[in-house]
Length: 293
Ligand code: UTP
Image (cartoon, rainbow, N blue to C red; front, top):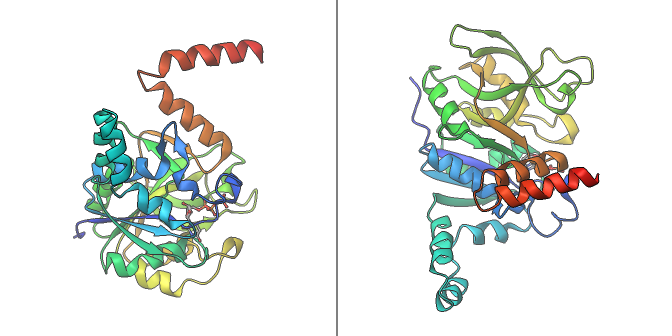
């Protein structure tokens, strides 16, 4: 029987080297998709899936994220005095999306280390993990909600979201080896973080959504430095395979790799095209640019 998943962790303490210089003084999780920071989109996804508390793991420049999810009284007062009450309401809503707890990763020692920093705030409970540079547009069906549901059906085993990546792209991801069951879930038998080209056991790539059982906490404590010199979450998850088990779940929706420049631009265009105020002028601009290119 699986415990209720109450808490999500969003790690935001990476160096964000692919987005320098933009990420020099601002965490890359604050970079906007049109006018909304990526971290707000994932906090909204977690809240839509029924998560009660979100633990954000901050690194350098932590105040930007904390301030974003706090009230901004001075700004609100100025906007109010200018008659911009709709904008004020919009800003106030951000401070109330979810209960946000902030913890610190003092050094960027890897994703697994960042998650371990959230342990005291989460407690010995299962945890949902969302990477803010992986964006999901699941419509009415938030990506992490699909995983929380699957977690409830897997008897205490961990679940990770996967998608099939094109051949030759496997070395960019954590790759799963497994057997497909009658529900369409893959029972994971092996995991490898960013396999060398030509060595991947499958094309099933782990993407940034996980729901892991409490057994992940002691596993993280003993995980040694792995790929790229960091403490990797994937390595800690390997120990779940012989314990409570691990399933890879193909989830529905559009996914954007916003940690990569082209993926980030793609996400911006896709989210803008969904907005009534932007769709027509953006399409016109895109057509003009294509004609000129
Ligand atoms: P990434 O590898 O995508 O982020 O980590 P990065 O290292 O910040 O980016 P690049 O590759 O240098 O451009 C995935 C997520 O894990 C967080 C990152 O903030 C990102 O959301 N992370 C990574 C941490 O919180 N701490 C770490 O030590 C490493």
